[in-house]
Length: 293
Image 1 (cartoon, helix red, strand yellow):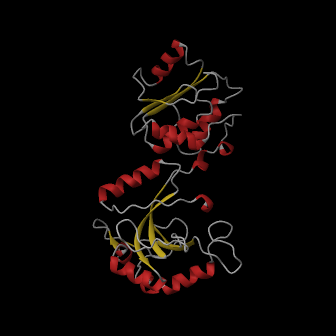
Image 2: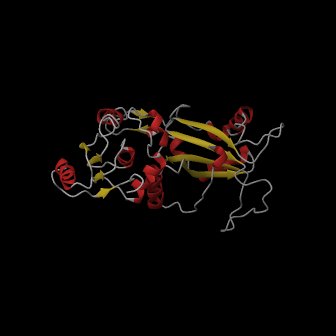
């Protein structure tokens, strides 16, 4: 939510750094979005001129041509205004109890027409190819700090393009699932566990205390894992394995190789888990053991 928004900036724009930043963000449930700053200014008009001078939106100003089919395509875009640390005439602060002003958003778009009229593609409000955002007031108006550590002047307005989004925990929230147990693991914790375990493409993943398989759902979301296996001592009257499979299928995620009923401390059960992946070792074992284990 806007109430808990935190902003971390970086001055590194190398191709390798940006690529790694995008990959990291796409795995993380605690990162909402990653933006690349393309221009700064103190007025909407100066922001537009700065964006033109910086030339970081030139891809929106040309038609893309497929050499094989000679098909011409144009990058769709949208632009929204997001206001922070500013107030309306009723004293409500934008970004907490009030959304950004639509009238000011229209004013921003009109004032930035010198930039926007150069875009070749269509406006698309839902899932555009290039979402653009004008951030206003990221620096508190009461702040006495006008320069960053590198001596760069801080401006009131920032134009940025969305380059990555973190994983949405709501996608596997317990109440959205068919298999719903009394003590499901928090999806945020599941993603953190997967990242702490450094799950990567091609891994074989085991959860010996799988429950409703929140960890395995998270694992298949952040990496193209080879296979997953879950063990849980609860029988199907408590944890319905068919419903777990449906939770994976309904999200277009690869279903586990096996969902085993049994005690993971039993050697026979552990061997059964190994047999499910052709008797090769697991690369990652994730576990949220019940209390007392």
